[in-house]
Structures are given as structure tokens and as C-alpha cells.
Image (cartoon, rainbow, N blue to C red; front, side):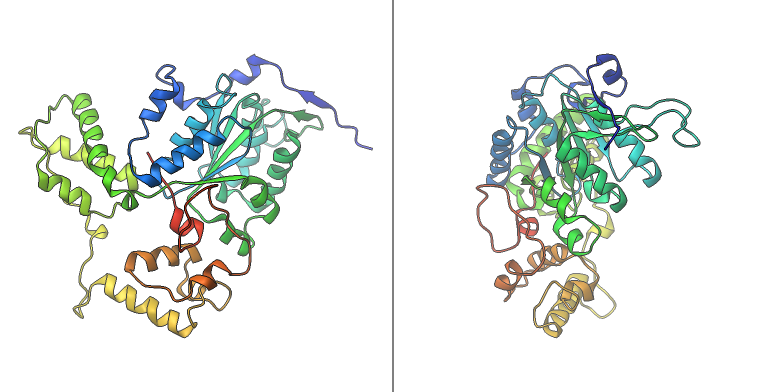
Amino acid sequence: MSTSVVVPIHSEAVRSQTVYNPIRRFGSPDCEELEARIIGSSPTLQHTLQQARMVAPTDSTVVIYGETGTGKELFAGLIHELSRRSAGPFIRLNCAAIPEGLLESELFGHEKGAFTSAVSQRVGRFEAANGGTLFLDEIGDIPINLQAKLLRVLQEQEFERLGSGRTIRVDVRVIAATNRDLASLVEEKTFRMDLYYRLNVFPLTLPPLRERHEDIPRLARHFTEDAAQRMQRPICTTPPETIQALMDHSWPGNIRELQNCIERAVILSEDGVLRVPPFEPMQNVSRNPFGATLEEVECDHILRVLGDTEWVLGGPAGAARRLGLPRTTLISKMKKLGIRSRCVARISGQGGVSQPVSPSQPETAHPSYASAVPYTA
């Protein structure tokens, strides 16, 4: 029989030690202001925003899928502010930024003397988020040995600090985010299947900027006005060729890259005319010594491997494994390169863990993460 003691958390003093709310750093904007920060009218963005509004009032766990720079934390903050927990803390943790040896302590806290450098008691993020929301960014980077403990607190809402036998009970909603395909990680045995299904209650996918080009002019105007005001550099004119250059770029860094690009342009614009600085060479297609573009070489190589594997993408003998890529990355590349897959049925019927799409999300020809990926900003 267990001798652990269940300790509910009521102390506001303890909670306030580590409370961090990125949404309220500069005041307490209402929900309309928060939604106004998500700029764009493209159908994919508006669909994702609608799904966020629908899930926000519930206590369901949400996983936000999206490439780097698409605005996953902004969506997480919006869901928190639209929820019944909006008066509670919004705590965030980037799981990829914490060394593996310290992540358990960051999540669950520790007692004094629990390990060599534990000179005092520390409250973990779950404890600090009691009554509110915990945002776990880059959830796919949590070490496998910690995933069982995370699963327990998600299911039972209880845990023990390191070095303590007391069971602490909390009331926390978890919103997770990742730029990786968790289903593929399950197939690779680096992510627990039970944790995947426990987290993936309500998946949201945020579209990359290259899939919402119609939003680029509006985003560019917003970032231009913001940067010009901050730097006191008035921008009077944005030539059509500047907008066209922005529209033609693929934006691998998504919203964050666009924002940085606009800021550089404002800094360099001394005559009040916004001109886009040259994009970094690594983002452009260049020619190799044999006269073919890198894109053409990449396309030919993928086609050869697809032919060798009879258009099977996943599995030990699939094209993704031979190319050294996650299956979803290969699908994305095929789409970008215009490779018309003859194996859509095979892709959707591959063995392993299925990846649910956002509820009511329009059907697409590709698996959810590759084709529905994601939103925002």
C-alpha cells in the first residue's frame, strides 16, 4: 500500500514564484486584441483560428503542429485567454532548450538535497501552472525516460517533486507544440505511443507562410509600421516590386523570417522607400557545375529513389528511410517540387500510428501534418 501523501496546491505565494504570462507582459489585452495579433484572412489561417476558438473553452489537451516561426506560442496564448482559465497563470517551457538532466526538475520541481546542486526547494512548472495553462513547446524533444512521468501527470493530474515522497495534485491544462511529426517519432520508437494519443486530443495545424501568400502584403504593412515606429524611421512608400519580391520568396523561416526581413528593410531605407534587402544565398536556388539547378538535382534524386522503392514512402525499406528524411518531410518536398505521387492511397494507408487532423479540417490529398501544416502569426 502506498504511503504517499496527496498535497493539493492552494498557495498563491508559491505559485507566483515562477508564473510567467507572455500575453500579459505589457498589460491585459482583451481577446479581440489578441486575435488582432493573428494577422491574415487566408482560408487556412481562418480555419485554424476557428478551431482554436472552439477548443478554447474546454479543458481538452491541444497539440499545435507547425513549422518554426509560424506562431505556435501566440495561438497557445490565445487559447488560454479564451478559456475559463484566463484568470490563472500561463506558464511556458521550451523542452528543447533545457538540458536533459534538468528538464525533470523544471517540470516537476525538486526538494533541497535531491541532487548535488539542489541547495533549496524548487517549484516546477506543473505546480506553478496550477489553476491555469502549461504550454510545453517542442514536446517532441522530451527524452523518452521522462515521457512516462509526463503521461502520468496528464492522466492523473498528480506527481512528486524530485527527492520527495509526497504526491502533489494539480489542476493544469496542457497545450503542447512541435515542429516535428509525433506520429513518425512513435514509429521510430523515440516517442511513446500512449503519450502521443494522450496528447493528441485536439490537434491544430498552423499553415506555413508559403501556403498563405495572400496574407503577405498585410503582414508586411503591419511589420513595416511597427518597425518604423520603433526606430523612428518613417516609411512613406512601398513599391510594387517590393511586395512582389516578398510574394515570390518561399519563407522557410515563416512569419519570423518575414518580420526580420522587414526590420532590415526599414533600417536600410533612408529615403522613406521600403526596399527588400537581398535574401541569403542559402535560401536561393543556384546552379551546380553540371548546369542543373539544385532543385532539379534534388527532384531527380527523389524520383530515382521513389522508383527504386516502388513509390513506398515509409517503413524500413521506404524512400524516406533511404533518403534519411522523416516521411512527412519527404511528402512536403514532393509537394514543393511538384512530384505527383502515384501512391496517395498507400501514404494514407501506411502502417503505424495515424495522425488525426484538426476536426472539420478540409480533406487533402496528403497526410495531415504534411498537407495541413499549419498557420499563423
